[in-house]
Image 1 (cartoon, one colour):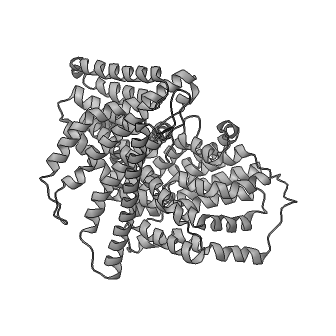
Image 2 (image 1 turned 45 degrees about the vertical axis):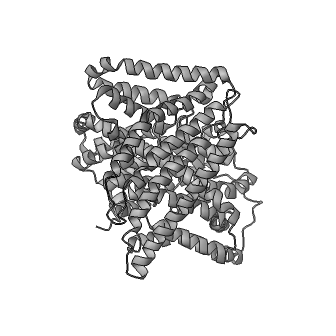
Image 3 (image 1 turned 30 degrees about the vertical axis):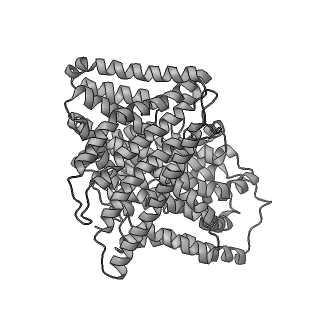
Length: 629
């Protein structure tokens, strides 16, 4: 679900691009090689540690008491170093809808502000982060019996490296006048807020609107990465309107990034890249195409089915789409399908498959709300079928007159051959789910079983394993992990600030007064999360509002798994529907189709998703009927 930053125009330079042999270029390349190499090694180490833990506990009945603790220490380092890699590559999630619509000069200024604003935050938070790491040295970890400073040092190290990376990017901007203007504007706004501190304190709850609506909206719509938008608003609110030590904000950042369940994020992202590299995704799609390719709209049905299956493996929607679009789209275009319709359906399936385990959004909900991950995994399969059926109805209507006279229907022998080839790939989602249900591995560990399975299949069955691609895949995994987990940390700190202000109590009272009981609460939640999904993306919205709204849902009589499914689909529709949904632009980028081409086709699919969502919201059994209790 990551949305890559757009390339800078004549006002700046491409993130991470080396333009010559200057000292900044040499420093950038040396820093990149060091940080990317370390992050890639940590991803490998995490896979090895968790797989060893599963093997020792399940096979040898001798659990490794230190494995989770070491994995947790390394995970914070992975998240922070990954955030450094993501910042250097311009891969932190950000909203570029407004930035891409303004003139070249204004756009160049906004792109430069998207660098100077994070620098301002990093400069202000670095000292509290160092203090926090020093405080943690007195705590000894229970299993390894080492100082917790070894883990906490990841925070000031990562924040300091991000500051260096951002400064290098700033120095390599080509337009000095715009760069100086951005630096001056950032400094002026920072000083103005600091001088206004005595005036802000007496305003009380109005500060919530100033910082958590005004500052966040200005930063997000201005193209500042979402994580830094949250961080700047939270830092400003705590520093200027409360007496809270800023050490506490660093602690909340640490807390948000340290949920062990979130370790599933990098492992499932890597697994998604692995199934594409080993040819498993291609084998699965070729088999589905042989079954349905001769039916009107058949390859569109294959796209819906393939996204359903692959979403059960990968944790990243971008990885899902990248595995499927290059395999299916050339044949679909050959059959006369409009490219705009293909990208519209691809985007719609992104929203449809958000609840299929082991979705990162499901794992995030479990980590921040305390809802059982196993229950979320069990509850997510059928609701996605309902929305898939709604999409299939639109496909049937649109392709009911398709001419298939030139399409060859493959003989049964060819279908059988493709089925045999695809069987190991089709079995993977079931292997993963069986491992969780049977208690072989936790939701965090199960991805390592999938990685081991995919590696063996790639080496022994498909004979396709490109060792040269392994390091870039590990670095990509670290970058996406850093972008996601840093948002979770910043959103956790922001949620803590909102909670301490009394906002959660006010929200709870307002939501509890909505007429219509549970269904009234679901209706207002659908509207709210479609809007939140289009602006914030799923994970930050869940981290911010999940802990506040799930208890209210329980009080309103809505089952927490049912509520999770409704909320995830609502956010998915917001995320993948234009004009604001960044997931839609991600689908266009992968498909190499102009966003304008998909606009006239997507609204039928969005309407189908809304109908499916209303059905899921109205019938709780769809979400809860197969729960294990």
